[in-house]
Image (cartoon, rainbow, N blue to C red):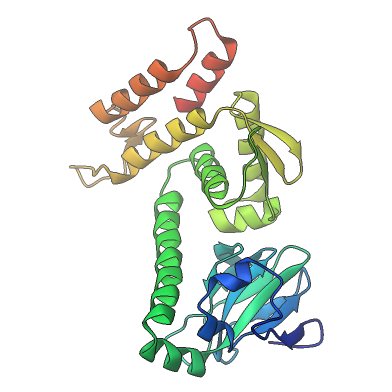
Length: 285
């Protein structure tokens, strides 16, 4: 599976790099690297393959996934340029990495040599450690995301996450490399639910949908407002230890923090007569 027919590899020697992102790692580590091109729909490696290399995404996009007990795919991370993947404490990978965009290229670092180099070179160790910390941070954020209470909150948080990780033009254009099926497997939702949530956010004026993978963020504050309220709900505990939850949190009451979020949103919003304000306020509520 790893490095098979659809994957073209070649040494990247110090004077032969043509990609700025590829040059961002320490020179000594790059001397170990080979360049791996993987076609969309192909796998870089699969669960059970020998964990003999680390990979850094240079261009394109991929997703890391595991298979649930019921045999369904659960995406645990989307990989974008600069991300490092392949860390494993065991001799075999426990997840799979599949490419979701054309023109995807990885740098491949042999695990044993890379680990030995990191143990004696502080610059290499720092670079690898920083990428590992970023991966852990994304996984922690995703745990919070999955704890959100409804589809609008999850999709709003997802759009903000992608806007933070990918270039967004001044007009708010967000080009998503993943399909709605990928988003559904990432958010643990049905694809129909993802589509309905996007349609609802569009109707409420928070986004516009320019194409299957092209979203324009019209009102980022509305998405943040919904995400902030959701985060407050997530971190509040139920003193009764029950699962009785109202529309605005445990027990159905609004907390002081939630009122503060809504008050802050109202301060930064246009006049009360603005139709779009009414729509985006509905998104917050």
